[in-house]
Amino acid sequence: MAAASTAFKKLIGNFGPVLRRCFPSVQVQASRNAHFKFVEDTPDPNLGITEKKNLVQSIADALDYTLAQDPSAIIFGEDVAFGGVFRCTVGLEEKYGKQRIFNTPICEQGIVAFGIGAAAVGTTAIAEIQFADYIFPAFDQLVNEGAKFRYRSGNEFDCGRLTVRAPCGAVGHGALYHSQSVEAFFSHSPGLKIVVPRGPIQAKGLLRSCIQDDNPCLFFEPKVLYRSAIEQVPVDDYLVPLSQADVVREGSDVTMIGYGTQLHVLKEVAEMAQEQLQVSCEVIDLQTVLPWDEDTVYKSVIKTGKCLVSHEAPITSGFGAELAASIQSECFLHLEAPVVRVCGPDTPFPHVYEQFIIPDKWRCLDALKKLVDY
Image (cartoon, rainbow, N blue to C red; front, side):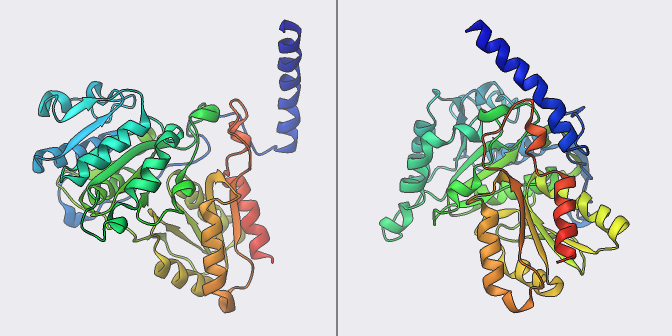
């Protein structure tokens, strides 16, 4: 066994330089967020006073406000009473008590099942799954119970007051069990809403909208942004509408669509395309994956005639496939090229070679060049 282990390490060690020769643009990550550049958004001045906060703090703000305004609201999950592994619920147990903020056993199916039951009797239930990678034991509860609760009762009962939070996505060192983007698994389930924020400003408003929505919502938080994304976040309560995409950069030549961390990659690619290729890119943050904002996307693609979709999740059956199929169906006569997808490959997340499978700016820029030249 020791000899086999040594041989495997030697093989992997030899493989690294080969990958670097094949991908000369890829550098060893100096930090967890080296594959993207976060540029903060400017808050709406109508929302009042702001404070500098990271993604963790903005999520904590949304939860704190909910608990203060809604006496029925409860938060539960693994270690949430201690603040959670990412510290999004720090101080909430001390402020609101153990009956409203409490730990659960390590049982994702039980966490979500409890949340469905609590929401069905009128409680505002906010569940935390410690990592999105471990949400799959709760898949049956979410898809066969939560999503169908309203339909199967003829709208007599529902669990719409349920919100499930979960950290997701690549972080630079998470490997196969702590790096996955799982949104596409649930996008095939009518009755659920799926939201992925790109930064602190959006996260606070989108999470408040999820909590107030009358449908069960999955709120996936890109964990690499937890502390690397810092913005001036409005202090007062506000909502960011669900199912409404955000055109974060207007353009005329190509439409680029993403969400979460990948949106920041596309923003940088748009800058590079303008500087290097004199190509004007319109960048759209989907924000809500399900149900997504078809009108905004179609309007943009009809204007530009070309479209690139990108996400971290594997390309096969990823949500980009739904976007590409819908765009090519509804905008076919306006398209000047097939819709291009730049996504993760169909492989588990590796550990030390994670940087080679992330759809970074270089892969996106290369695909954009081919799209422009089609």
